Length: 89
Figure 1 (cartoon, one colour):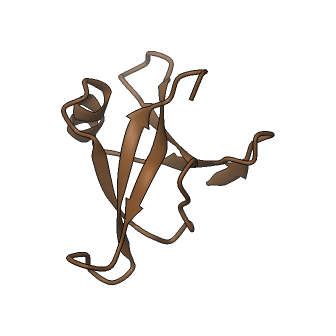
Figure 2 (cartoon, helix red, strand yellow):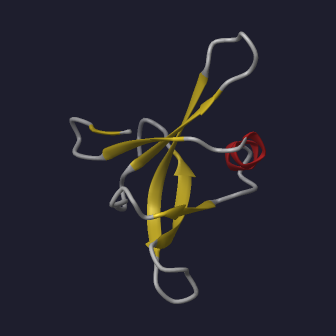
């Protein structure tokens, strides 16, 4: 699901495997390969949701800082460079 925020950045709600999310959160992973089926743009925000048992879900937000497509990528795939979203980015 995608939604437009007031600042004109697009919010993309995405699924991700827990081990990939953990590496993103801890800064070990700085990019994500995705099918480009959502018209990703630099400045858009990815929202990942972590579910753990009966605990309330926890949300993580990452801003797209660069998009690579073409050379070395399968057709319709992109490599999204990400940084953890803070209020000042």
